[in-house]
Length: 371
Image 1 (tube, one colour):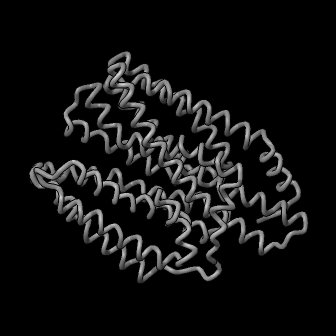
Image 2 (cartoon, one colour):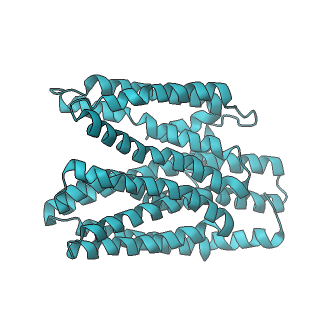
Image 3 (cartoon, one colour):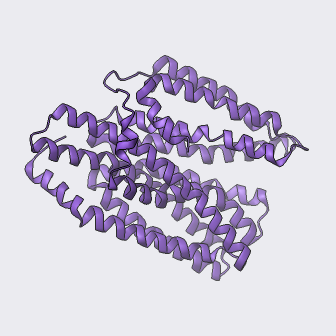
């Protein structure tokens, strides 16, 4: 939920200023975790510290909003994908760092992982202070969030982002637990494999943005959801065959596709408001005002979609929990994911490739109105 105020903070305080603050804020959950990570700590304390860790999610949203203001439309997919892919890569990196710590000094000193991260957070904060910039043309507008939530497109994109980013973050948490519960892997055995999914999913996110720049975000997103439905079907087949290798492959395929979809859906957000701005300019509206509005609303929607999409990770883990409790396997959860991806594919096709928005985009292209 912190993604919402963090998104607006970029315009209120400036991208450089807010990055310095938000990067420094990462020290709070890291230090707290290092303090409490010892035997005998009550469970509610761990929950509280984990919740404070949500500043990392807010940091991600504000960085995406900031990146959105720097690049022209033709390069937004690659820029947003690269920034987000780097952020998502942290999931795999911290798993590898934890494995390294476990393998070298044992499980008795887990806080060593946090001590490794503390100087890196300080370096990020100093780097933001020395080399980042504020953009003078970005002005605070408290109406942005209120304005964007009235846009039907905002909720369509948020729904689609549940399917892409929600899948990525949900599978990142669930992958190891599913291997332990369904294939009886030990935590260390599972961890030796599970980092591959977030790693490949993160690396594929810039690819999704680049593909979207070339062939269109909606086309890439539609293909991703169709293939994700097939990937979910592959895991069901592997589960019935009790094939650990095939099951792991199915999970990794879903990670890669969700990463590509993350990049392509975020490319769609500025394209939506670009199309609206181009139509307004063609009808006689002020060009500078419409361009500023398009950038402002796309930045706000990045925060809204990021917050709603991240909740998809919660839904995935609840679905796995219910599936294992009731049926002893994750198959029912994957059946529900398969159905959801089909709904997302149909929605993408109906709204952005065959609906009113698709016709508006074609009108802009035919009229030669550039934004």
